[in-house]
Length: 573
Image (cartoon, rainbow, N blue to C red; front, side):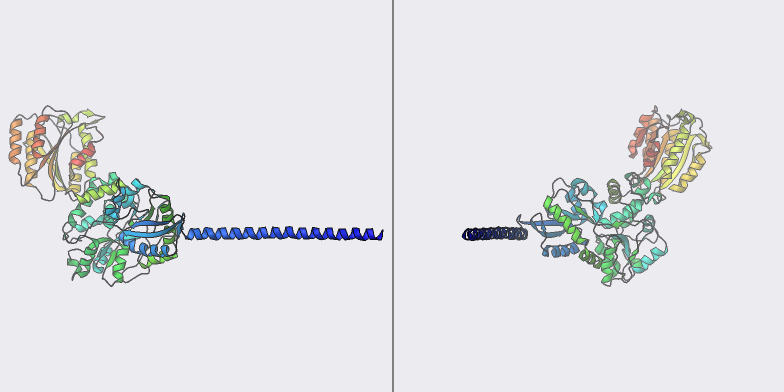
């Protein structure tokens, strides 16, 4: 019995021992599995990291195109970023920055087929000088992220310190530049092709009453804007032809023994361009005209036509450019760096960096194009003699008012938009208005604005008369225009009539011959006709206008477009 109990106890001990051993084995196996899983996980992570470092998708180049003023800084930042080994979408990225003038790059990017011979490799990231200059290309390409400025720099006029001080003391505005450029002591403002000049021309064309709103195409093509831009562009033609760019203009200013007699006294530049020269010790200063300041805003444009990897790389590179190293590099190059508060470079001799408020709004693309078109083909100031029919038929009712009242109102609108650099004369005609003469001079040829006021004031007291001596009155007005001819711009007589000539003393053929005899090829004068009715002698008037290079327009006095027609015919064309 005792032996049986001892044997049973021994078997139990052996069973427990086997159970403990089995448990230990299981635990050891579990531990080994866990350790193995962690090892596999770590090895997988390491392999993934190694794979990333190895660029499993290969190498890729981020092509960047930038305006020359920012290209060098971006190239240096690109080299620094590339040295850090950026990997985007499993591609190792190398950054290549190409400098291309904004206008050249914009034209290439807006084209249906991109031409790399014009502006270098097709970019995924483009940093032009300003948003307005990039508009057409952005419309064609689209952008992947909302554009933001990389850096900014106000547009100013670069000049010798004495010239800049004189302009500042006069409190000159952007819209004063045409008058300054065409005065007896002209500013001699160079207008080299480029974004700073374009921004200056837009500022000149802007209506001071709406200067905080974007320039529209209607304003850009108005007689006042066309006249202002034309005056500035025509004055710039006196600048020597070899001064074709900003650098040449600034060199001329710096080298002139007397800045007041230099062939160039000022040129549109960015603050940054001026800062770099002043740091080199050149005697230059910035004149900042009053009014909203145009800004070279250098947007970072990730182009939607690039492939996904390039677009992602461009976004990451922009983040790096906007980080501390980029801000420091751009500040050192004379740029303002936007952020929560714009950082500005430290003042240097002759140049500080004042706050800009307000910034000029970006013009519409069509408005900017219209302004540049005017500058390329400027209009000369017009000289127009308005000859208005006040015969009895002008008392006819048309649209609720008399024809004469309708024309008076339209002339008021048309001449109100004229600039002061042209000339205007106001004549009326019927029969016996000035002794035996069928016409009367209400305002002789003179300053457009002054003559318009004088003529319209006198016209307000006129009542329609009797007969219509059109031919005799046209000949008198035409001969006067030839006699008072000016070489400054186009000369014309504008006839506004509502009926046929009923003065039988001059036949149609005699009228046309006398008009031809009065013409002088050395003093060309155009005859334009606005007929308020389809008169029986309209063919004669067409012949008269045709032999002088003029137009004939048949319309109604109640036509809402009459004021616009008169404005066009009394302005430079």
